[in-house]
Length: 223
Image 1 (tube, helix red, strand yellow):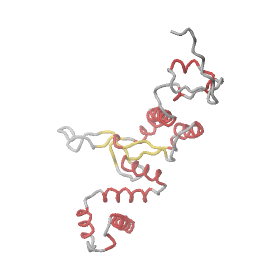
Image 2 (cartoon, one colour):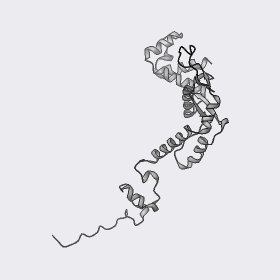
Image 3 (cartoon, helix red, strand yellow):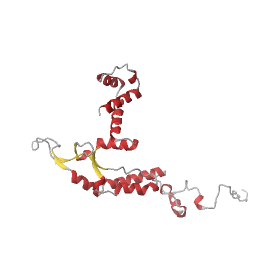
Image 4 (cartoon, helix red, strand yellow):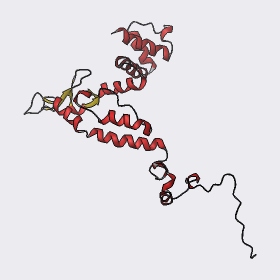
């Protein structure tokens, strides 16, 4: 063997003596923890998250759990629930076992408590960065009894769809019905139009977009 020692590779323009410019992607988590002066983000020094988006998804989930146990939310439901005979019919309760129920403040119908939710009247919004966190967490958790409402799960589904697509509640309601209608098979769709006085050969319902538009217009005209 030669007694010569290998010479160190010369530094390139990509190399740096600055620790915060080092590539830490291949480091062991314990090595990363030592480099506190690099100001690593949480998702950069822990294997729990691969990206910033995953980290804030975890943040939202943790805060949503806090919202589910919010004392004001629980108090609001307790103030609006009552016993009604919507439970199982038994010998003792021939009209139905009394169970906790409440009215949906959107549609006005009576539901079992388990079929409803306490919701924010105003949307809490989203949180995808620390710049949005303070506003979002305040909207989510800084509440009182006047900022809440009881809503049934079907209405809540429509309300969420309306918020996501910038629609009114009624527009979202029609949109969701149209989506459900278009999931039916084509013969069933034509059967519905025929039942409501349409000629199945009418060019206004000749394809999927036209049938969807015609169905939505029918629902609008019912109002």
